[in-house]
Length: 300
Image (cartoon, rainbow, N blue to C red; front, side, top):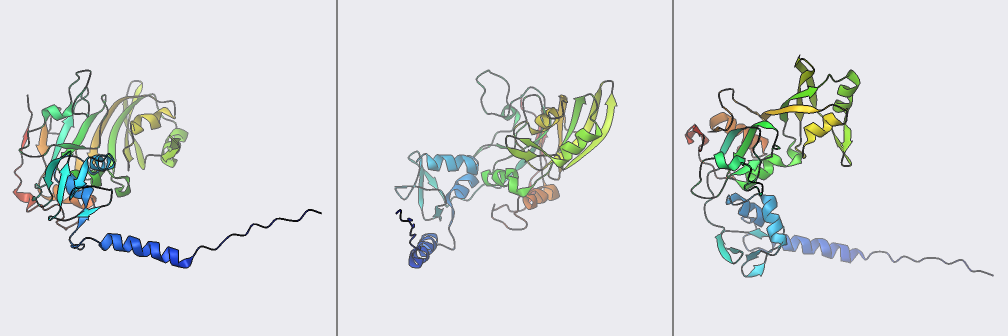
């Protein structure tokens, strides 16, 4: 006679769970200046040498040390900590640069990278030189897309303005071959699957047409790779011209020619800080953005 076998599960010890929570709480407050401490990757990004995402990969690769020990993601530091990157001292207490933002009119035929093995021109070649740090692009545009591209010298600001959680709008003028049916427009508004995730235009409107081509205005709240073009392709429509005309509250100025840049100032800069979730706080240590002179130009 077969006996039925019962599986006996031991209940999780309540004390073990409480202990782990206590340990996590202790790790968060272990720093002697816990109230003044900031996340390591945020401090590094604010130095203007890379985005927060780039610094996170460097930390994971073991290239960053804090007080002689390998750093870890989420670690908090203050100005009293000694940070080294690839053995070189990075002073956390150094006052960060005032964040600056450029609006650049990207032409077709430039790539959003610092160097290109094929020798193609890059968007960074046109930008003004910085005494410290470097320019980082706020999002990207592909080789055949033109229009508004923003840059900042603050890695933390770049991270905030590109993170999907902010829901920042990107608006494009799109020319497609043919005319989209009502069903196609409804599908693009309702959403289609791209790479296993739902993608859609939050707004779409017909503009005008010339010959076999039709222009549309579309708005997205994220910036996945070639998302605008790929969305239209799901409806068997090919994009033959794509222009970004707006990012958040910044609109591509009509007076800004392709290949030229201008520095943002005043209210529009405050609006970008607000869009990044900064509001009136001074975590980026900007003094008075209205003092930033309005400059425009083009490097040869």
